[in-house]
Length: 155
Image (cartoon, rainbow, N blue to C red; front, top):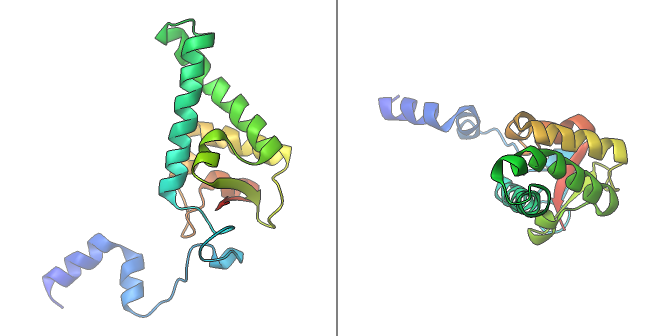
């Protein structure tokens, strides 16, 4: 084995090394019975992060303009509770937020039905903690989705 191969496999990680040995991991969502592409397939991390930034930006704008009365320090106190309220309300009623709608995403249970209110509340609380969404499995489902049995899919 060449040192470049050893270094390359170390940088690529264990999944790339296993794939070189012939292991087939399948596509994202295959284990969950979701399609590979199109509506109902698992949304990629780029779309989900983009939707989160849009939602966060809109909530920050509302917190600054309406609740914070134009002062940044006051708006900062309102941003996270307002994000929780808006996200939980929109996900519980329509399964999507403004950012998710712009990026063509929806949050559903693993069986494809709308998430329940307790699922939405716990998922949103974990999302506000920021650590669970940063850790995901090979299907790119964050811990906040795994904890409540939901998945973010394309519309």
